[in-house]
Image (cartoon, rainbow, N blue to C red; front, side, top):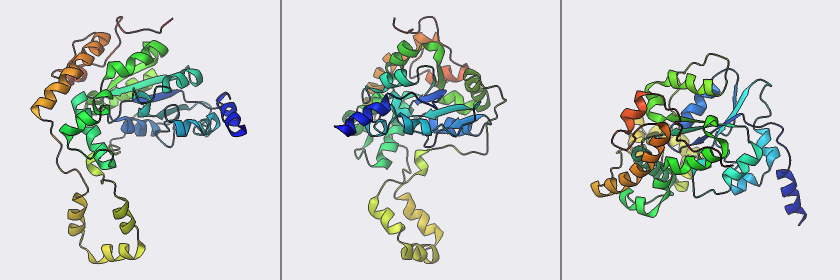
Length: 310
């Protein structure tokens, strides 16, 4: 009983150091890259880890506000402090997240990065396969893992935030425009955050968290590779070309392809959601025109965007 009471008292504390902004998603939409680029700008303090998932994950939330505050305690007084947790826009899996955020970081500015929902789904599937949380072929996985679609229903994920924080506190960003016009989009993000400096996109930095570069999880393989005597043998006697061929066994070497039937089915669901999102942005938006529309101009909310509920 004493342990439970202590836990709740920690949650009642006021955050001594809190983020000025949060990149709330979407998963597999270059949030890691944006986080990294912001960390390279003077006057920014980005959390480590990049995704604390504090307001969403029960095991992290239980560590208390003092732990979360410690992620930003090293920032200078004038630094812009930020974190990037894509779990914050993974409805319906984390229903308590927004309530906690509103209670403890009510003044935070929010950034939501979106990507063509079909491309995001495929990248999410690749991520899940590499994490070994998804074992099925992609067309079967779409039916067995609803989050592959749900996390790409952007209006569904955004509406609660728009109705809680208001559109003026949420910046819509698109992966396709960020990768095509990185400097312009970085300047747009920094302007939204009230940054007084001149941001510069670091072209020497590689994209972060790219699925095709990662290896599928395997506890047995990792234990063997980390065994010191075998490391010496592998590096000393096994040619690099052979090691590279073996490594490819644990990588995704070919992009998964949705069947025409599955593609038609998920596109219809995405189009319904994108129609609503496009209405909020004052444009027609669907899977077929998504890339062209979002690359052509920086998105802005229209007067049809949901506002905070009274």
